[in-house]
Length: 569
Image 1 (cartoon, one colour):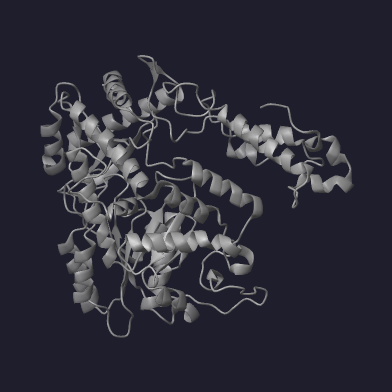
Image 2 (cartoon, rainbow, N blue to C red):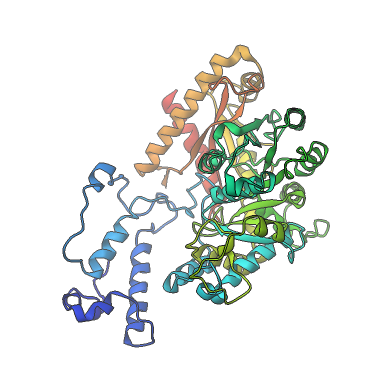
Protein backbone atom coordinates (compact mmCIF):
# COMPACT_ATOMS: atom_id res chain seq x y z
CA UNK A 1 0.00 0.00 0.00
CA UNK A 2 0.97 3.66 -0.17
CA UNK A 3 3.69 4.83 2.23
CA UNK A 4 2.35 8.39 2.34
CA UNK A 5 1.33 8.33 5.98
CA UNK A 6 1.50 11.35 8.32
CA UNK A 7 4.63 11.80 10.37
CA UNK A 8 2.98 11.26 13.76
CA UNK A 9 2.25 7.64 12.75
CA UNK A 10 5.92 6.89 12.11
CA UNK A 11 8.20 4.55 14.02
CA UNK A 12 10.10 7.51 15.52
CA UNK A 13 7.06 8.66 17.47
CA UNK A 14 6.76 5.30 19.16
CA UNK A 15 10.31 5.39 20.59
CA UNK A 16 9.35 7.94 23.23
CA UNK A 17 7.21 6.55 26.03
CA UNK A 18 5.74 10.01 26.59
CA UNK A 19 4.14 9.73 23.16
CA UNK A 20 2.27 6.52 23.94
CA UNK A 21 -1.00 8.34 23.26
CA UNK A 22 -0.06 8.37 19.60
CA UNK A 23 -0.93 4.70 19.43
CA UNK A 24 -4.56 5.61 19.97
CA UNK A 25 -7.20 7.77 18.32
CA UNK A 26 -7.54 11.16 19.98
CA UNK A 27 -10.67 11.72 22.10
CA UNK A 28 -10.79 15.39 21.07
CA UNK A 29 -10.77 17.32 17.84
CA UNK A 30 -7.15 18.21 17.24
CA UNK A 31 -4.56 17.91 14.50
CA UNK A 32 -4.70 14.11 14.73
CA UNK A 33 -8.32 14.09 13.52
CA UNK A 34 -7.22 14.88 9.98
CA UNK A 35 -4.38 12.42 10.37
CA UNK A 36 -6.73 9.63 11.33
CA UNK A 37 -9.09 10.42 8.45
CA UNK A 38 -6.11 10.25 6.11
CA UNK A 39 -5.10 6.88 7.56
CA UNK A 40 -8.61 5.48 7.05
CA UNK A 41 -8.61 6.74 3.48
CA UNK A 42 -5.27 5.05 2.85
CA UNK A 43 -6.55 1.81 4.34
CA UNK A 44 -9.69 1.87 2.20
CA UNK A 45 -7.69 2.62 -0.94
CA UNK A 46 -5.30 -0.22 -0.07
CA UNK A 47 -8.03 -2.80 0.46
CA UNK A 48 -9.83 -1.63 -2.68
CA UNK A 49 -6.64 -2.12 -4.66
CA UNK A 50 -7.17 -5.87 -4.20
CA UNK A 51 -10.40 -5.71 -6.16
CA UNK A 52 -10.18 -6.63 -9.85
CA UNK A 53 -10.29 -3.87 -12.45
CA UNK A 54 -13.02 -5.49 -14.55
CA UNK A 55 -15.97 -7.79 -13.94
CA UNK A 56 -14.56 -10.71 -15.95
CA UNK A 57 -11.67 -11.17 -13.52
CA UNK A 58 -11.64 -13.80 -10.80
CA UNK A 59 -14.00 -13.37 -7.88
CA UNK A 60 -11.39 -13.39 -5.17
CA UNK A 61 -9.31 -10.48 -3.90
CA UNK A 62 -5.77 -9.85 -5.10
CA UNK A 63 -3.61 -11.95 -7.39
CA UNK A 64 -2.34 -14.84 -5.27
CA UNK A 65 -4.84 -17.74 -5.27
CA UNK A 66 -2.92 -19.79 -2.71
CA UNK A 67 -3.78 -20.30 0.93
CA UNK A 68 -0.55 -19.17 2.54
CA UNK A 69 -1.51 -19.55 6.19
CA UNK A 70 -1.09 -22.83 8.05
CA UNK A 71 -1.98 -23.56 11.63
CA UNK A 72 1.37 -25.11 12.51
CA UNK A 73 3.36 -22.16 11.21
CA UNK A 74 1.05 -19.54 12.73
CA UNK A 75 1.26 -21.12 16.17
CA UNK A 76 4.96 -20.34 16.28
CA UNK A 77 4.23 -16.60 16.45
CA UNK A 78 5.58 -14.68 19.46
CA UNK A 79 5.31 -11.10 20.68
CA UNK A 80 8.23 -8.96 19.53
CA UNK A 81 9.95 -6.57 21.98
CA UNK A 82 9.22 -3.58 19.77
CA UNK A 83 6.18 -2.92 17.68
CA UNK A 84 6.23 -2.18 13.99
CA UNK A 85 5.26 1.04 12.29
CA UNK A 86 1.61 1.65 11.53
CA UNK A 87 2.37 1.41 7.81
CA UNK A 88 3.98 -2.00 8.25
CA UNK A 89 1.09 -3.28 10.37
CA UNK A 90 -1.43 -2.03 7.85
CA UNK A 91 0.45 -3.82 5.10
CA UNK A 92 0.22 -7.04 7.15
CA UNK A 93 -3.51 -6.51 7.57
CA UNK A 94 -4.13 -5.91 3.89
CA UNK A 95 -2.07 -8.96 2.93
CA UNK A 96 -4.38 -11.28 4.87
CA UNK A 97 -7.22 -10.41 2.48
CA UNK A 98 -5.25 -11.71 -0.50
CA UNK A 99 -7.22 -14.56 -2.08
CA UNK A 100 -10.34 -14.02 0.02
CA UNK A 101 -13.64 -14.49 -1.89
CA UNK A 102 -15.03 -11.20 -3.15
CA UNK A 103 -18.62 -11.77 -2.07
CA UNK A 104 -20.35 -9.15 -4.20
CA UNK A 105 -18.52 -10.06 -7.42
CA UNK A 106 -20.84 -11.06 -10.29
CA UNK A 107 -18.95 -14.36 -10.75
CA UNK A 108 -19.39 -15.27 -7.08
CA UNK A 109 -22.46 -17.51 -6.93
CA UNK A 110 -21.32 -19.77 -4.09
CA UNK A 111 -23.87 -18.99 -1.38
CA UNK A 112 -26.15 -16.35 0.06
CA UNK A 113 -23.19 -14.24 1.15
CA UNK A 114 -22.85 -10.86 2.84
CA UNK A 115 -22.95 -8.02 0.35
CA UNK A 116 -21.73 -4.62 1.44
CA UNK A 117 -24.33 -1.89 1.32
CA UNK A 118 -22.75 1.49 1.95
CA UNK A 119 -24.84 2.47 4.97
CA UNK A 120 -24.15 -0.80 6.80
CA UNK A 121 -20.41 -0.52 6.18
CA UNK A 122 -20.35 3.04 7.49
CA UNK A 123 -22.45 2.17 10.53
CA UNK A 124 -20.33 -0.85 11.39
CA UNK A 125 -17.01 0.99 10.95
CA UNK A 126 -18.02 4.09 12.86
CA UNK A 127 -19.28 2.01 15.75
CA UNK A 128 -15.78 0.61 16.21
CA UNK A 129 -14.39 4.08 16.83
CA UNK A 130 -16.26 4.56 20.12
CA UNK A 131 -17.21 1.00 21.10
CA UNK A 132 -20.72 1.46 22.48
CA UNK A 133 -21.78 -1.59 24.48
CA UNK A 134 -25.51 -2.25 24.31
CA UNK A 135 -25.56 -3.67 27.80
CA UNK A 136 -27.30 -0.86 29.60
CA UNK A 137 -27.86 2.81 28.91
CA UNK A 138 -24.67 4.11 30.52
CA UNK A 139 -22.44 2.26 28.05
CA UNK A 140 -24.77 2.37 25.05
CA UNK A 141 -26.53 5.71 25.40
CA UNK A 142 -28.45 6.54 22.22
CA UNK A 143 -26.84 3.76 20.13
CA UNK A 144 -29.33 1.33 21.69
CA UNK A 145 -31.81 2.96 19.34
CA UNK A 146 -30.41 0.71 16.59
CA UNK A 147 -31.36 -2.48 18.45
CA UNK A 148 -34.70 -1.19 19.70
CA UNK A 149 -35.90 0.23 16.40
CA UNK A 150 -34.66 -2.71 14.31
CA UNK A 151 -36.52 -5.12 16.58
CA UNK A 152 -39.68 -3.03 16.43
CA UNK A 153 -39.55 -2.77 12.63
CA UNK A 154 -39.05 -6.54 12.26
CA UNK A 155 -41.84 -7.31 14.73
CA UNK A 156 -44.17 -5.04 12.78
CA UNK A 157 -43.14 -6.70 9.52
CA UNK A 158 -44.11 -10.03 11.12
CA UNK A 159 -47.57 -8.75 11.99
CA UNK A 160 -46.89 -8.57 15.73
CA UNK A 161 -47.62 -5.75 18.16
CA UNK A 162 -44.21 -4.07 18.07
CA UNK A 163 -44.82 -2.31 21.40
CA UNK A 164 -45.13 -5.66 23.17
CA UNK A 165 -42.35 -7.42 21.22
CA UNK A 166 -38.59 -7.20 21.55
CA UNK A 167 -35.34 -8.31 20.01
CA UNK A 168 -31.72 -8.82 20.86
CA UNK A 169 -28.77 -8.83 18.46
CA UNK A 170 -26.40 -11.74 18.77
CA UNK A 171 -23.42 -13.48 17.18
CA UNK A 172 -25.20 -15.07 14.21
CA UNK A 173 -27.95 -17.51 13.33
CA UNK A 174 -26.36 -19.92 15.81
CA UNK A 175 -26.84 -17.29 18.49
CA UNK A 176 -30.51 -17.05 17.56
CA UNK A 177 -30.77 -20.83 17.90
CA UNK A 178 -29.10 -20.60 21.31
CA UNK A 179 -31.51 -17.91 22.46
CA UNK A 180 -34.55 -19.86 21.31
CA UNK A 181 -33.39 -22.97 23.15
CA UNK A 182 -32.61 -21.08 26.35
CA UNK A 183 -36.02 -19.39 26.10
CA UNK A 184 -37.68 -22.78 25.54
CA UNK A 185 -35.88 -24.50 28.41
CA UNK A 186 -36.68 -21.65 30.80
CA UNK A 187 -40.32 -21.65 29.74
CA UNK A 188 -40.94 -25.42 29.75
CA UNK A 189 -38.63 -26.33 32.67
CA UNK A 190 -38.91 -23.30 34.96
CA UNK A 191 -36.67 -24.77 37.69
CA UNK A 192 -33.83 -25.38 35.25
CA UNK A 193 -32.23 -21.98 35.78
CA UNK A 194 -31.40 -22.80 39.38
CA UNK A 195 -31.13 -26.58 39.31
CA UNK A 196 -30.04 -27.31 35.76
CA UNK A 197 -31.68 -29.41 33.05
CA UNK A 198 -32.75 -32.66 34.71
CA UNK A 199 -35.34 -33.77 32.16
CA UNK A 200 -34.74 -35.00 28.61
CA UNK A 201 -36.92 -32.43 26.91
CA UNK A 202 -37.05 -32.65 23.14
CA UNK A 203 -36.31 -30.20 20.34
CA UNK A 204 -38.23 -30.94 17.16
CA UNK A 205 -37.07 -29.67 13.78
CA UNK A 206 -37.18 -30.81 10.18
CA UNK A 207 -34.49 -32.81 8.42
CA UNK A 208 -33.64 -29.57 6.61
CA UNK A 209 -32.88 -27.65 9.81
CA UNK A 210 -29.51 -25.91 10.09
CA UNK A 211 -26.74 -27.75 11.93
CA UNK A 212 -26.82 -24.97 14.53
CA UNK A 213 -29.29 -27.29 16.25
CA UNK A 214 -26.26 -29.39 17.26
CA UNK A 215 -24.36 -26.39 18.62
CA UNK A 216 -27.18 -25.18 20.85
CA UNK A 217 -28.26 -28.55 22.24
CA UNK A 218 -24.61 -29.41 22.90
CA UNK A 219 -23.53 -26.12 24.50
CA UNK A 220 -26.63 -25.77 26.67
CA UNK A 221 -26.03 -29.26 28.04
CA UNK A 222 -29.41 -30.50 26.85
CA UNK A 223 -27.65 -33.02 24.63
CA UNK A 224 -27.70 -33.56 20.89
CA UNK A 225 -29.57 -36.85 21.33
CA UNK A 226 -32.61 -34.86 22.42
CA UNK A 227 -33.11 -33.54 18.89
CA UNK A 228 -35.89 -35.27 16.99
CA UNK A 229 -35.79 -34.69 13.25
CA UNK A 230 -39.15 -34.56 11.53
CA UNK A 231 -39.35 -36.06 8.07
CA UNK A 232 -39.53 -33.79 5.06
CA UNK A 233 -42.18 -34.01 2.37
CA UNK A 234 -40.54 -35.61 -0.69
CA UNK A 235 -39.74 -33.11 -3.46
CA UNK A 236 -40.77 -30.17 -1.25
CA UNK A 237 -38.23 -30.24 1.61
CA UNK A 238 -40.97 -28.99 3.95
CA UNK A 239 -41.74 -30.45 7.35
CA UNK A 240 -44.06 -33.47 7.13
CA UNK A 241 -47.05 -32.58 9.33
CA UNK A 242 -48.19 -36.19 9.67
CA UNK A 243 -44.80 -37.18 11.05
CA UNK A 244 -44.79 -34.16 13.35
CA UNK A 245 -48.21 -35.08 14.72
CA UNK A 246 -47.08 -38.65 15.32
CA UNK A 247 -44.03 -37.44 17.29
CA UNK A 248 -46.03 -34.89 19.31
CA UNK A 249 -48.62 -37.51 20.22
CA UNK A 250 -45.90 -39.96 21.25
CA UNK A 251 -44.21 -37.35 23.44
CA UNK A 252 -47.51 -36.44 25.09
CA UNK A 253 -48.50 -40.06 25.69
CA UNK A 254 -45.10 -40.76 27.26
CA UNK A 255 -45.14 -37.53 29.32
CA UNK A 256 -42.02 -36.26 27.55
CA UNK A 257 -41.89 -32.44 27.35
CA UNK A 258 -41.34 -30.83 23.96
CA UNK A 259 -39.18 -27.78 24.57
CA UNK A 260 -39.45 -26.23 21.13
CA UNK A 261 -40.48 -26.90 17.59
CA UNK A 262 -38.29 -25.14 15.04
CA UNK A 263 -39.68 -24.24 11.63
CA UNK A 264 -37.10 -23.45 8.97
CA UNK A 265 -38.18 -20.50 6.85
CA UNK A 266 -36.18 -20.73 3.61
CA UNK A 267 -33.62 -23.50 3.87
CA UNK A 268 -30.11 -22.67 2.68
CA UNK A 269 -30.22 -25.06 -0.25
CA UNK A 270 -33.81 -25.56 -1.34
CA UNK A 271 -35.45 -22.37 -0.02
CA UNK A 272 -38.25 -24.40 1.58
CA UNK A 273 -40.64 -22.87 4.12
CA UNK A 274 -42.16 -24.99 6.87
CA UNK A 275 -45.95 -24.54 7.46
CA UNK A 276 -45.92 -22.54 10.71
CA UNK A 277 -49.67 -22.04 11.07
CA UNK A 278 -50.31 -25.77 10.82
CA UNK A 279 -47.50 -26.48 13.28
CA UNK A 280 -49.08 -24.05 15.74
CA UNK A 281 -52.40 -25.87 15.41
CA UNK A 282 -50.71 -29.19 16.18
CA UNK A 283 -48.96 -27.73 19.22
CA UNK A 284 -52.29 -26.48 20.53
CA UNK A 285 -53.73 -29.98 20.00
CA UNK A 286 -50.85 -31.75 21.77
CA UNK A 287 -49.70 -29.54 24.66
CA UNK A 288 -47.15 -30.56 27.26
CA UNK A 289 -48.27 -32.06 30.56
CA UNK A 290 -49.46 -29.53 33.11
CA UNK A 291 -46.21 -29.94 35.09
CA UNK A 292 -44.36 -28.35 32.17
CA UNK A 293 -44.61 -25.01 30.43
CA UNK A 294 -45.84 -24.34 26.92
CA UNK A 295 -43.73 -25.50 23.96
CA UNK A 296 -41.94 -22.68 22.16
CA UNK A 297 -42.52 -22.26 18.43
CA UNK A 298 -39.44 -20.74 16.81
CA UNK A 299 -38.89 -19.81 13.17
CA UNK A 300 -35.34 -20.02 11.86
CA UNK A 301 -35.96 -17.25 9.33
CA UNK A 302 -32.40 -16.00 9.01
CA UNK A 303 -32.69 -16.29 5.21
CA UNK A 304 -36.43 -15.99 4.65
CA UNK A 305 -37.14 -12.96 6.86
CA UNK A 306 -36.50 -10.44 4.08
CA UNK A 307 -39.61 -11.53 2.17
CA UNK A 308 -41.57 -9.83 4.95
CA UNK A 309 -40.65 -6.61 3.12
CA UNK A 310 -43.59 -7.40 0.83
CA UNK A 311 -46.03 -7.04 3.75
CA UNK A 312 -47.66 -3.89 2.35
CA UNK A 313 -46.94 -4.52 -1.32
CA UNK A 314 -49.94 -4.27 -3.62
CA UNK A 315 -49.62 -7.41 -5.72
CA UNK A 316 -52.64 -6.40 -7.79
CA UNK A 317 -51.35 -3.05 -9.06
CA UNK A 318 -47.68 -4.14 -8.88
CA UNK A 319 -46.24 -0.61 -8.47
CA UNK A 320 -42.64 -1.74 -9.09
CA UNK A 321 -43.64 -3.44 -12.36
CA UNK A 322 -42.05 -6.76 -11.55
CA UNK A 323 -42.48 -9.31 -14.36
CA UNK A 324 -45.49 -11.53 -13.70
CA UNK A 325 -43.48 -14.70 -13.05
CA UNK A 326 -41.21 -12.80 -10.62
CA UNK A 327 -44.23 -11.24 -8.92
CA UNK A 328 -45.76 -14.68 -8.44
CA UNK A 329 -42.58 -15.96 -6.78
CA UNK A 330 -42.48 -12.94 -4.49
CA UNK A 331 -46.13 -13.41 -3.56
CA UNK A 332 -45.69 -17.09 -2.76
CA UNK A 333 -42.61 -16.42 -0.66
CA UNK A 334 -44.39 -13.69 1.24
CA UNK A 335 -47.43 -15.90 1.83
CA UNK A 336 -45.07 -18.52 3.26
CA UNK A 337 -42.95 -16.23 5.45
CA UNK A 338 -45.86 -14.24 6.86
CA UNK A 339 -46.79 -17.32 8.90
CA UNK A 340 -44.06 -16.29 11.36
CA UNK A 341 -46.97 -14.36 12.87
CA UNK A 342 -47.93 -17.63 14.61
CA UNK A 343 -44.48 -18.16 16.12
CA UNK A 344 -43.17 -17.06 19.51
CA UNK A 345 -39.86 -15.89 18.08
CA UNK A 346 -37.84 -15.78 14.88
CA UNK A 347 -34.24 -15.21 13.85
CA UNK A 348 -32.88 -12.73 11.31
CA UNK A 349 -29.50 -12.50 9.57
CA UNK A 350 -28.95 -9.15 7.90
CA UNK A 351 -25.64 -10.53 6.64
CA UNK A 352 -27.54 -12.98 4.44
CA UNK A 353 -27.40 -10.86 1.28
CA UNK A 354 -27.59 -7.35 2.76
CA UNK A 355 -24.87 -6.28 5.21
CA UNK A 356 -21.42 -7.23 6.59
CA UNK A 357 -20.89 -10.00 9.13
CA UNK A 358 -22.13 -10.31 11.82
CA UNK A 359 -25.60 -8.80 12.07
CA UNK A 360 -28.19 -11.17 13.55
CA UNK A 361 -31.18 -10.53 15.78
CA UNK A 362 -33.45 -12.80 17.79
CA UNK A 363 -36.95 -11.30 17.71
CA UNK A 364 -39.55 -12.36 20.29
CA UNK A 365 -43.27 -11.69 20.39
CA UNK A 366 -43.79 -11.37 24.16
CA UNK A 367 -41.16 -9.02 25.54
CA UNK A 368 -42.44 -9.33 29.08
CA UNK A 369 -42.31 -13.13 29.13
CA UNK A 370 -38.90 -13.50 27.49
CA UNK A 371 -37.12 -10.84 29.52
CA UNK A 372 -38.64 -11.92 32.84
CA UNK A 373 -37.95 -15.61 32.25
CA UNK A 374 -34.27 -14.90 31.62
CA UNK A 375 -33.83 -12.04 34.08
CA UNK A 376 -30.91 -12.16 36.52
CA UNK A 377 -29.92 -10.12 39.54
CA UNK A 378 -28.32 -6.76 38.77
CA UNK A 379 -24.55 -6.53 38.72
CA UNK A 380 -23.14 -4.28 41.41
CA UNK A 381 -20.93 -2.31 39.02
CA UNK A 382 -23.59 -1.57 36.40
CA UNK A 383 -25.68 1.55 36.83
CA UNK A 384 -28.97 1.57 34.96
CA UNK A 385 -29.32 5.11 33.62
CA UNK A 386 -32.19 4.38 31.23
CA UNK A 387 -35.13 2.05 30.67
CA UNK A 388 -33.35 -0.37 28.32
CA UNK A 389 -30.92 -2.70 30.09
CA UNK A 390 -30.47 -6.02 28.27
CA UNK A 391 -27.61 -7.05 30.56
CA UNK A 392 -30.35 -8.48 32.79
CA UNK A 393 -31.14 -11.28 30.32
CA UNK A 394 -28.62 -11.30 27.47
CA UNK A 395 -26.23 -14.17 26.78
CA UNK A 396 -23.36 -11.82 25.91
CA UNK A 397 -21.95 -9.15 28.20
CA UNK A 398 -19.69 -7.42 25.69
CA UNK A 399 -22.39 -6.45 23.21
CA UNK A 400 -20.89 -4.41 20.40
CA UNK A 401 -23.35 -2.11 18.64
CA UNK A 402 -21.70 -2.93 15.31
CA UNK A 403 -24.19 -5.60 14.26
CA UNK A 404 -27.29 -3.73 15.35
CA UNK A 405 -26.03 -0.53 13.71
CA UNK A 406 -25.41 -2.40 10.45
CA UNK A 407 -28.86 -3.97 10.53
CA UNK A 408 -30.60 -0.74 11.47
CA UNK A 409 -28.73 1.20 8.78
CA UNK A 410 -29.71 -1.44 6.23
CA UNK A 411 -33.40 -1.08 7.07
CA UNK A 412 -33.14 2.71 6.94
CA UNK A 413 -31.12 2.81 3.72
CA UNK A 414 -32.93 0.19 1.64
CA UNK A 415 -36.45 0.48 2.97
CA UNK A 416 -39.07 -2.01 1.83
CA UNK A 417 -38.61 -1.16 -1.84
CA UNK A 418 -34.85 -1.62 -1.78
CA UNK A 419 -35.15 -5.02 -0.10
CA UNK A 420 -37.80 -6.02 -2.63
CA UNK A 421 -35.52 -5.06 -5.50
CA UNK A 422 -32.59 -7.04 -4.12
CA UNK A 423 -34.75 -10.13 -3.65
CA UNK A 424 -36.41 -9.97 -7.05
CA UNK A 425 -33.03 -9.44 -8.72
CA UNK A 426 -32.00 -12.89 -7.54
CA UNK A 427 -35.29 -14.40 -8.72
CA UNK A 428 -34.86 -12.84 -12.16
CA UNK A 429 -31.38 -14.34 -12.44
CA UNK A 430 -32.65 -17.79 -11.46
CA UNK A 431 -35.53 -17.65 -13.93
CA UNK A 432 -33.20 -16.58 -16.72
CA UNK A 433 -30.94 -19.53 -16.02
CA UNK A 434 -33.89 -21.94 -15.91
CA UNK A 435 -35.00 -20.68 -19.30
CA UNK A 436 -31.55 -21.21 -20.76
CA UNK A 437 -31.25 -24.70 -19.25
CA UNK A 438 -34.22 -25.95 -21.22
CA UNK A 439 -31.99 -26.52 -24.23
CA UNK A 440 -29.77 -28.96 -22.31
CA UNK A 441 -31.47 -32.30 -21.67
CA UNK A 442 -28.56 -33.51 -19.56
CA UNK A 443 -29.07 -30.82 -16.88
CA UNK A 444 -31.93 -30.59 -14.40
CA UNK A 445 -32.66 -28.05 -11.69
CA UNK A 446 -33.75 -30.23 -8.79
CA UNK A 447 -35.46 -27.38 -6.93
CA UNK A 448 -37.12 -25.68 -9.88
CA UNK A 449 -40.47 -25.53 -8.08
CA UNK A 450 -39.33 -23.50 -5.10
CA UNK A 451 -39.47 -19.72 -5.24
CA UNK A 452 -36.03 -18.76 -3.96
CA UNK A 453 -33.03 -17.57 -5.94
CA UNK A 454 -30.82 -20.65 -5.55
CA UNK A 455 -30.49 -23.30 -8.26
CA UNK A 456 -29.47 -26.85 -7.39
CA UNK A 457 -28.27 -28.49 -10.59
CA UNK A 458 -27.56 -32.09 -11.49
CA UNK A 459 -25.67 -32.61 -14.73
CA UNK A 460 -25.25 -35.99 -16.37
CA UNK A 461 -23.22 -37.34 -19.29
CA UNK A 462 -24.44 -35.78 -22.51
CA UNK A 463 -26.42 -38.77 -23.75
CA UNK A 464 -28.60 -39.05 -20.61
CA UNK A 465 -32.00 -37.42 -20.17
CA UNK A 466 -31.58 -35.68 -16.83
CA UNK A 467 -35.26 -35.45 -15.99
CA UNK A 468 -35.90 -39.16 -16.45
CA UNK A 469 -32.65 -40.21 -14.79
CA UNK A 470 -33.11 -37.96 -11.77
CA UNK A 471 -36.68 -39.13 -11.25
CA UNK A 472 -35.50 -42.73 -11.13
CA UNK A 473 -32.58 -41.93 -8.82
CA UNK A 474 -34.87 -40.02 -6.47
CA UNK A 475 -37.61 -42.65 -6.26
CA UNK A 476 -36.36 -46.05 -7.37
CA UNK A 477 -34.08 -48.04 -5.03
CA UNK A 478 -32.93 -50.08 -8.04
CA UNK A 479 -31.12 -46.93 -9.21
CA UNK A 480 -29.16 -46.46 -5.99
CA UNK A 481 -25.84 -47.40 -7.62
CA UNK A 482 -26.47 -44.97 -10.48
CA UNK A 483 -27.36 -42.29 -7.94
CA UNK A 484 -24.03 -42.80 -6.19
CA UNK A 485 -22.18 -42.84 -9.50
CA UNK A 486 -23.70 -39.54 -10.56
CA UNK A 487 -23.22 -38.03 -7.09
CA UNK A 488 -19.52 -38.77 -7.56
CA UNK A 489 -19.68 -37.09 -10.96
CA UNK A 490 -21.25 -33.97 -9.41
CA UNK A 491 -18.53 -33.88 -6.76
CA UNK A 492 -15.75 -34.17 -9.35
CA UNK A 493 -17.29 -31.36 -11.42
CA UNK A 494 -17.56 -29.18 -8.32
CA UNK A 495 -13.92 -29.87 -7.40
CA UNK A 496 -12.74 -29.05 -10.91
CA UNK A 497 -14.74 -25.82 -11.00
CA UNK A 498 -13.23 -24.92 -7.62
CA UNK A 499 -9.72 -25.53 -8.92
CA UNK A 500 -10.41 -23.47 -12.02
CA UNK A 501 -11.76 -20.66 -9.85
CA UNK A 502 -8.67 -20.65 -7.62
CA UNK A 503 -6.35 -20.92 -10.62
CA UNK A 504 -8.06 -17.93 -12.29
CA UNK A 505 -8.75 -20.06 -15.34
CA UNK A 506 -10.11 -17.95 -18.18
CA UNK A 507 -12.86 -19.43 -20.35
CA UNK A 508 -13.95 -17.36 -23.33
CA UNK A 509 -12.43 -14.25 -21.76
CA UNK A 510 -14.08 -14.66 -18.36
CA UNK A 511 -12.79 -16.18 -15.16
CA UNK A 512 -14.43 -19.36 -13.90
CA UNK A 513 -17.38 -18.59 -11.62
CA UNK A 514 -17.23 -19.48 -7.95
CA UNK A 515 -19.93 -22.13 -7.40
CA UNK A 516 -20.43 -24.65 -4.61
CA UNK A 517 -21.94 -28.07 -3.93
CA UNK A 518 -24.59 -29.47 -1.62
CA UNK A 519 -24.07 -33.07 -0.54
CA UNK A 520 -27.43 -34.34 0.50
CA UNK A 521 -29.93 -31.49 0.49
CA UNK A 522 -32.64 -34.10 -0.05
CA UNK A 523 -32.88 -37.82 0.77
CA UNK A 524 -34.32 -40.21 -1.77
CA UNK A 525 -37.98 -41.08 -1.27
CA UNK A 526 -37.04 -44.64 -0.32
CA UNK A 527 -34.67 -43.33 2.36
CA UNK A 528 -37.14 -41.34 4.44
CA UNK A 529 -35.40 -42.10 7.71
CA UNK A 530 -32.05 -41.04 6.17
CA UNK A 531 -30.46 -44.17 7.60
CA UNK A 532 -28.72 -44.75 4.27
CA UNK A 533 -26.17 -41.91 4.26
CA UNK A 534 -25.38 -42.44 0.58
CA UNK A 535 -28.96 -42.44 -0.75
CA UNK A 536 -29.11 -38.65 -0.88
CA UNK A 537 -29.04 -36.07 -3.64
CA UNK A 538 -25.89 -34.13 -4.53
CA UNK A 539 -26.18 -30.98 -6.61
CA UNK A 540 -24.14 -28.05 -7.86
CA UNK A 541 -25.27 -24.93 -6.04
CA UNK A 542 -25.69 -21.66 -7.93
CA UNK A 543 -26.66 -18.62 -5.83
CA UNK A 544 -27.05 -15.68 -8.28
CA UNK A 545 -27.82 -13.01 -5.69
CA UNK A 546 -25.01 -10.50 -6.20
CA UNK A 547 -26.58 -7.21 -7.24
CA UNK A 548 -23.95 -6.98 -9.99
CA UNK A 549 -24.86 -10.25 -11.74
CA UNK A 550 -26.30 -10.00 -15.25
CA UNK A 551 -27.68 -12.68 -17.65
CA UNK A 552 -24.20 -12.88 -19.19
CA UNK A 553 -22.77 -14.36 -15.98
CA UNK A 554 -25.60 -16.89 -15.83
CA UNK A 555 -24.85 -18.10 -19.37
CA UNK A 556 -21.16 -18.27 -18.55
CA UNK A 557 -21.87 -20.43 -15.49
CA UNK A 558 -23.81 -22.94 -17.61
CA UNK A 559 -21.01 -23.05 -20.16
CA UNK A 560 -18.35 -23.66 -17.49
CA UNK A 561 -20.41 -26.38 -15.80
CA UNK A 562 -20.80 -28.26 -19.10
CA UNK A 563 -17.12 -27.79 -19.91
CA UNK A 564 -16.10 -29.19 -16.52
CA UNK A 565 -18.46 -32.14 -17.01
CA UNK A 566 -16.84 -32.90 -20.34
CA UNK A 567 -13.40 -32.99 -18.74
CA UNK A 568 -14.29 -35.37 -15.91
CA UNK A 569 -16.56 -37.80 -17.80
